[in-house]
Image 1: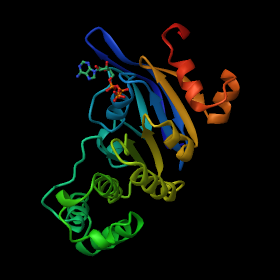
Image 2: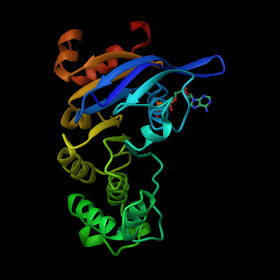
Image 3: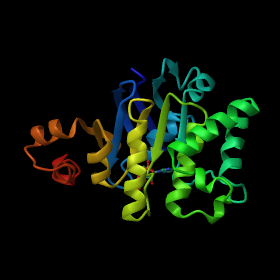
Image 4: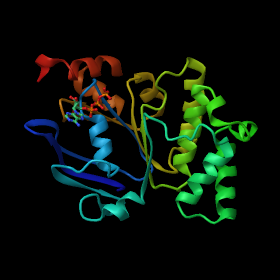
Length: 241
Ligand SMILES: Nc1ncnc2c1ncn2[C@@H]1O[C@H](COP(=O)(O)OP(=O)(O)OP(=O)(O)O)[C@@H](O)[C@H]1O
């Protein structure tokens, strides 16, 4: 098991934003975390990435506690956040090499990893382009490729296809499919089709709690619904609580 979350909780004063979340995610799994706006998805991911301290509970990331061994836990993960960390005035290759440096790679190793990521993400033809000249779709590919430069065991993708056109979105899905099994992926998204294409398992959060967990087939069976959208609407309806 790569991610083992136990009773993870976040309060802002008296408001409970993430409420006693417990969840296991297996090695190599592609897991989608769903929920309406303000369900607590980003807060959960921020806690798992060490960007926000939990009020209570803990999570083990590849055996390292986010509360007791924060530095070791952080080494296991990387994130492609909603606000991209791409440097606009550096080229595609320079952005990747810069990430390699941050993660302590030798120059040769950084070059090797950067080339491998550029091939995987279809960025080789744009390697000398300044990042600020890339389309939104390519910019996001670069952001994910940069996150992969640290060879993470766990990759968090926070709404990776937000604002992309249909083709750019599908292109990124193809690339992300190739990462399946290689790295454990936790995806948050509002695009249910994306989940249907990519995710092995789905968790639906509502008001900080995990309302349902399973494969899409299991969730449809349990709720007697015929699509993920119907399941989602049923489980996030206010009077269903
Ligand atoms: N620093 C903060 N102080 C107080 N409340 C906060 C803070 N950060 C987030 N919240 C609240 O926590 C709740 C959960 O926010 P979060 O960003 O985790 O939701 P989300 O599920 O990721 O939503 P979205 O789909 O819109 O990104 C929201 O009601 C938000 O207003």
